[in-house]
Image (cartoon, rainbow, N blue to C red; front, side, top):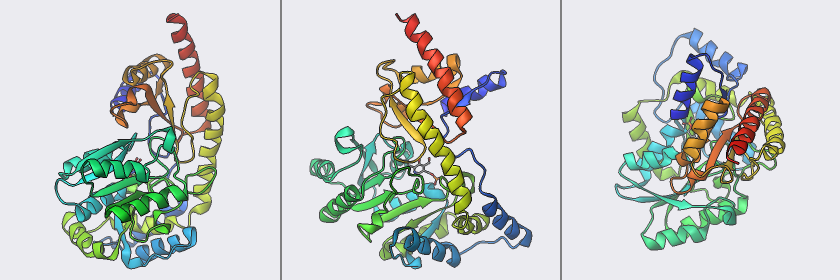
Length: 375
Ligand SMILES: Cc1ncc(COP(=O)(O)O)c(C=O)c1O
């Protein structure tokens, strides 16, 4: 947020900034989705829906699991939510008691930690690294559980900020460990659809009791519609229905209409994804040439998580200088990893290829000058 505020200040003063910090698609929502919502808007009857979501959207999401993953999901176990963010609050409240400990990864999505703390829960950040391909493993979970019992485990694949995808076996191993230790397993699958080599697997394929958090935000370019979904075990449906009824009555009706149409917008979504793939291919080749070649595997999402250790051990200052001196906005790793993020940055390639090229040109010149100045 600080990077974005500072970038806005530079732009107000007449400067230009290449935005590589944003965590959302730059493309508009596909036309087919907007048209469906437009028709519903014209119709004018925009009321509450059932707290769990409209029947037709829940059925459509269940069908998606059959078609995309070959997994049978009863529509009754699908809950429509206000983005995955709303889904996390519902799932955490339904699963956990105050004081419960929930394992998450470092690096990881910062809101997990903040939501857990706000709900009186304790995030247990487990450091992951190249040895485990930046994912939690049964051993890491068992070790944290032995130190002090956990109540749940949260993984994501593809991950933010790393872009790493967990192999089906890695997900199955985590699911099995959670079953054995009696822990809730929550799988954030919000970047599904955005993988470049092999598709991501749903944790439901390994464990029908896993709690799935998903969203229309990323692959479908619908961040502002605030609509997502959960798939939960049957015994959680009623508690979650009660929570959602009281918190928000229902998810906005127009967004639910749009969400249902999203599953028919594959052609538009795939074309947008082809743009990310071109950006990714370019950056994988161009970043090493300017001295930013130390990054994690970029399996999915639209992020590259870069180790800047050879340039700086202070990612906050590095990002501030990159913004002020080179006009490129990137995100300091400290947002994602409190202990080790001082030597990492996240770069998002959700914009255009021209923006990626401009960012590389600016960063390349800046890094060269910087290295020259420092001898
Ligand atoms: C890993 C991850 N999970 C969840 C979210 C929340 O997204 P939304 O609430 O729009 O579904 C984000 C947003 O950037 C994210 O990166």
